[in-house]
Image (tube, rainbow, N blue to C red; front, side, top):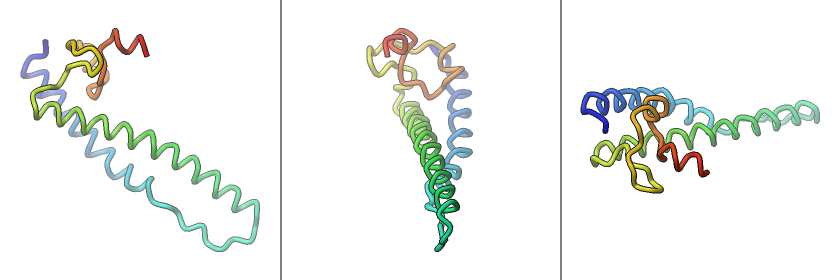
Length: 110
């Protein structure tokens, strides 16, 4: 079971991650101005770069959602409980991945 000090430390870590990630997600979510290029190779490169940007955006957006969910759980006193089986998520897992939604056993099953 997590101590109050451990929960506070993890909450601080989650909050710091949220503050760092939020502007990155916002910036990655912006659609670049492709201009009116006539060069097909340049348009292809720009499209490929935007596709890569969208992939990173989706990954970061999902990560940010997990962080925000963990912070809400802390506020509700439900942090550290596996969403699948309802068992406690070990402190070792939460130290590595404080936004974890699953315990070690349920992670192995997915």
